Length: 586
Image: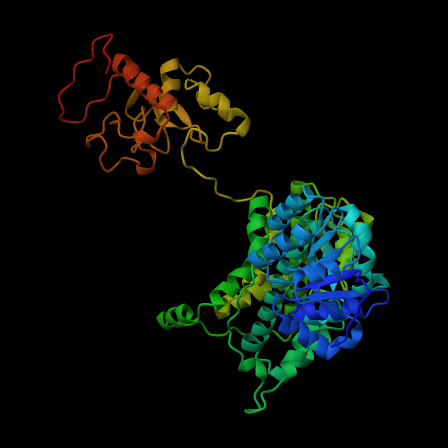
């Protein structure tokens, strides 16, 4: 084993395939001396035996690793995200000094990165959550790198990362994304776009193979041709290469022998979850995640398949079917990228990050999985207008989507008629059509409740004043009506009106609880109702005991008011009930 007594300017912890390849990449660049450490020393020995001539400084324990680093110490963690990362961070934090840098190069949840950065900042340490894209080959030959962290950390770390990053258009594919969790957030979105991109390619293959009747050899030619135009990308390129592979034993195309099951590592799911939280529709990414979820349940799929005994016949397709699929694929990819950048914009606003969108497109042009020729178009779009509302507004991309509109309709229609799922294409068309419609058709929650649907700024006021009615109710509504409205809990979007069918003036009706709730809340018999109070019409989720005290007081007030002034209509055949005397407590 080669020994090196010099100090290292960078260290790598975790020597699985990604970690060892990244260490080799760092060591191959001029000016870098790399310290390496792994919890199990066998992996360290393996790296040293195979590549010991690269000048690594190997350590058997964490103390030796820390001692081998020059100040300010910089260590890149390449271990499994989660508890393993936290354990290594804890070890380093106990040994590092103020100004030292800890880099997390795994696929960490950006919320964890924000928390870790905050905790380590209190100790005077710099924590840099860094997205590294490109897989094993990218880690070795040049990945796309998305670091977060402080400006101080970037000054030390930037030159090192630039030395190992991929190069596209003469520029290194790395930039300081933003503070704390910005790097891991952008990497998460990158992976979400990757999910959508692969789903669309898979649907294109499926349509051409099952509907268009193309053989595997013909599909190789199709994808090779597509890779020469606007669709030129790494994923289109490797799709053609995969289709060329044949099984050595059977001579059949390898793609026909691969199990149709796919899992998820988490970043795609995180993308959808955070998009929902931020109110950003990422339907293409969502459909890709759901498609993987369906594919991962073969037993369930088999049971459903057996229950469907009749399938539609494959529809006839025009001679231009492959061209339609190509146009629809390109337009759908544009939508997927547009949704991804919309999510980055929303994340930057929510977490106060200053993210240059054009720079994100630049660093994705090389080294990463979604590198594509049309990323240059995205760079140009954001160079022209950094405040672009959406990529779909840019003239180039607006035209690309417009040109693919007719092909979209034909492809989605043929897929539906043939019984072939195409969720990626379908969601992409809806994503474009919905915002361009004069009016959107959406459903709003109709659940009642004293604060549902009420702006936060007015909730506290309403909690302290039970006699405030729905602001949309008439200003002439009397005190008893307002109290009844409070008891009915109709502020959450419910409309309150005076009188109703068969009810004399002064009766308050919550239109959604007309026969389920009385004017004083659930469990109180409405006028004309012949069932017992608390019977089958009672609303389970709004039990009397769950209402706040002020709401119960309002309900009592409404009952007293009704007993004094409201004449209940008699049911047919039922004797007239005497009016309650004035002053009755009800």
